[in-house]
Length: 335
Ligand code: EAX
Image 1 (cartoon, rainbow, N blue to C red):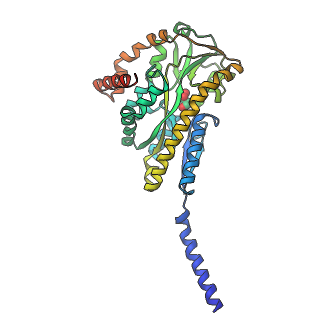
Image 2 (image 1 turned 90 degrees about the horizontal axis):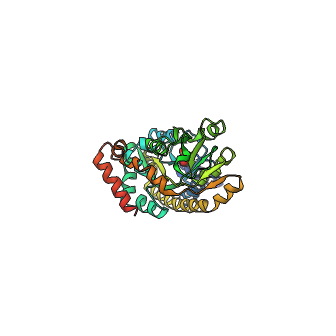
Image 3 (image 1 turned 180 degrees about the vertical axis):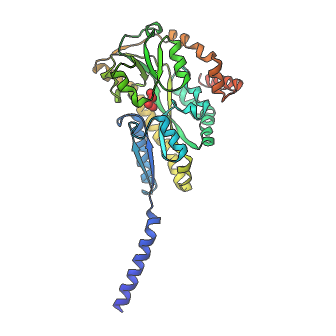
């Protein structure tokens, strides 16, 4: 009798164990970023991971790989298409290669403040562009924030566009950024972010431009003496997931991942705003000389970018008229 009970207990345990892998099979979502661990992207991905872990009861695990460990932003987006990487939080730097309409948000001085940016990004224009990623094997989980970009350099305290004459400046790899810097008189050099610190250190370039949160977390103040608060680009970021990874999630998990992304987005936007409020003082403390150029002269200098037929056409996905409509609609909605 006792033996029989033991026997049954053993069978019951074996059946349970056999079922366990299916029950507790973990789905891992690797998320790659280009920035240093303390940067707001990574704090937001950590928050995203906590929420996903909690709400799926540990079934879905988010793993963060910062500092371009998994490659450049462009490499990571390609990885999403191939299914070799599940997720990335990236600037729009490389995204125009996948969905050309994204270039709209690379235009200089498009948004006067964050509210205008959120209105357009979270509204029909931004959502429409984000949805286009599905046709290239990628799904957007929302517009995050990199922030308003400012120029640092090792040569001169920039007060007006003329001060940029001949300055070699690293830009993200998109024509709109190149044209913008050319119109300011600078000599732009497109380069992946991961190579930037060394390029500044070795003086391959004199200058770069990024939001304060990036300048601080990447310690560019060690190799750049001057910071000009130009705010010339509002740089959005996107949290992207491979359609291959998305399809492996259950509908419940998909809903949780989307909710967590939205919460992490709001958290990250707050961190970004705080960074702008606090980091000027921190960068001054690190020895940077900060200037506050009159924006008008910069806005005028870059106006030609908005008239450039190649830019307009690219924003329209190869269609000039659609590009112009998109630009006009974004500018109207940003008012
Ligand atoms: O996405 O490439 C850049 O300058 C970006 O601002 C940075 O990698 C964060």
